[in-house]
Image (cartoon, rainbow, N blue to C red; front, top):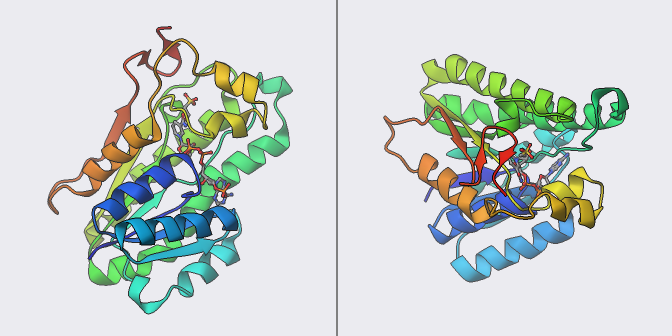
Length: 250
Ligand code: NDP
Ligand code: 8X3
């Protein structure tokens, strides 16, 4: 039985991926900051799919907490085959001059440094075994900028560079690295971005059919289950109503 660690599994893509992998008999490690949701999902996956599930509660920005959590994994869960760096967020949608510097800090710390910490903590065992797959959840916002996307776009462009760097550096250890770049998908992403303003968040998905978390989870699962000699390096997916970063047909 293979083991997958999914960061940011309390909602959206991460939760859908946990369900997809559990349904396909993977051993699951789920992470996030909201302990109540983690507990609920741990129970749901174990009860429904009868697979071993372990929940780790930590903030990916907290370097010490990240390393401590990975070090404390129970013996059955230490051999991680697939790491999905999914935890991330956007905060604010303002012109550069109006954007909050604190929002920039949080996005860069979470979307870039958080991925570096978690990956560095998980890597030693993958290197030892000379196998593993790291999947980083980028964004179409990391391929092309859009108006008022400044800090979020910068964080996802940086993550794209990081995925490319990891792929080159980890090649000699036979570790696959995949960057996945979804376009607009309806999750809690916009509620978080607009700081709880559901009315503004809902408008983001009006008049067209966005991606769902399940659509993204299915694509990630496909990427993760290809034969050992095949690696999708980089994959952009959008709903059919979207082309490029913010061109939507409504
Ligand atoms: P959600 O808001 O639904 O989920 C985000 C997840 O990230 C939650 O589980 C949250 O858990 C976790 N998270 C956020 N900050 C931290 C942190 N500091 N430490 C630990 N966990 C954290 O959004 P999505 O599912 O849509 O987003 C998942 C990823 O996909 C993100 O990286 C996002 O940038 C990216 N993405 C989203 C798109 C979209 O349109 N929805 C499109 C392209 C990419 P908790 O709050 O419990 O910590
Ligand atoms: C989230 C997608 O286009 O809202 O990464 O930035 S977008």
